[in-house]
Amino acid sequence: MDRRTRQIVDVFCATSDKTPAELQACINRGCPWDQPIPAHSMRAMVPSPTIPLNIAAQYQRHDNLAVLVNKALEEGRPELLESPDLVGKSPAYLAVQKGNPLCLGVMAKAGANLHRAIPHVWQFTNMQHNNLTDPSELSMPIHHALVRTVVSFTTRTCLCYVKNQKEAKLQVCTQCKMAYFCGGECQKKKWPQHKRVCKKIRKGADLVTFHNEMPKQKLVDEDGFLPFDEVVDNDLDLEDGMNEEDYYDASIIWEWYDPGTMKWNPYPKHINRSLSGLQDLGSPRYMYKPGNKDAEGNEEREQTLNPPNNVATNHAYYSEMIDHHIYTGCGRMMRMRQTC
Image (cartoon, rainbow, N blue to C red; front, side, top):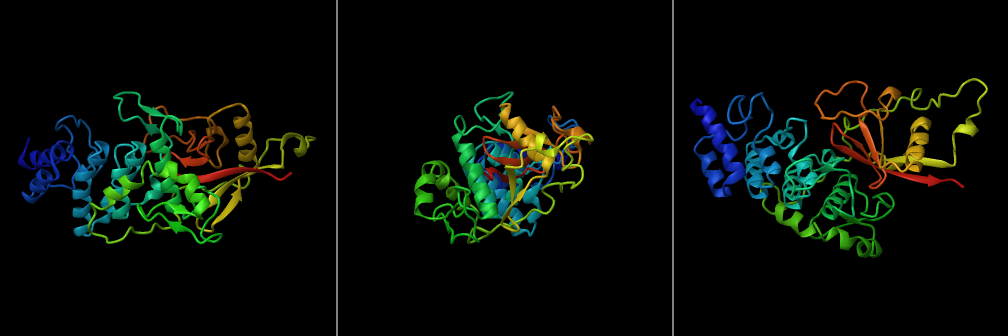
């Protein structure tokens, strides 16, 4: 192992196992803190994009994550906040997936893109293998509270998902500066949930000294979701002579929320019908890809950076009422309403 590789490995080890002072000393010695670990060093047998920022989030080292985040911001390199791991997920995504409000606070205060920090599967942190699971507020209340806080923060809607800034004068949580409430009733209703993560988010955020205030998020991640195909996604596959009324209940409308326009938009007819059908069957989710019916219900066993064309990109979970793009890490609110 050459000297430079040894230095990179030293930073990775310090990030996961040492104190912030020891990590800072390692950086001060000139060890590269922003480089991926080379292939064939330690356990890395193939090139990996993972840098120490990812490792800090992976190992839930919020203290060392703050050291690296402050370094990136001081050197004018905010793009490092979005550094992907092997499957393209950012440190902020990992913080929420692992249910770690301290790491989330660090990434939020640093100004990371939290639109891409809404995981479709959550991780039990006390298990070593097979520890990814579907969302469940009952068994994983901290993860649930984190996701709700991130969605409120990125969309500027209240924690009860009822009102946005156009509909109410929202008040931001005075502690974490991320969650919004539309009034005293909303705060009273949601505080038992939000208090599980609020103070720890603030504690993590306080470690980031580059910004004085919590930076606001852009309302929209332009590349977060694929657009719907007006022809394919509205096609109900009706043969000649079939009446749409017999195969499509127009009184049940599924909608997704667009934070850019602050409006709810109806899903295309085929997706609308499928959302109702899978929910009636008791499925936890509906998997689809806009404009590609062949991908419906198909998923990769092991997620990759370049998925095949015939796998679903979106997983819409009924328990959380969030439509996830599982490859970008983005999520958008959805709802079902009846017109009569």
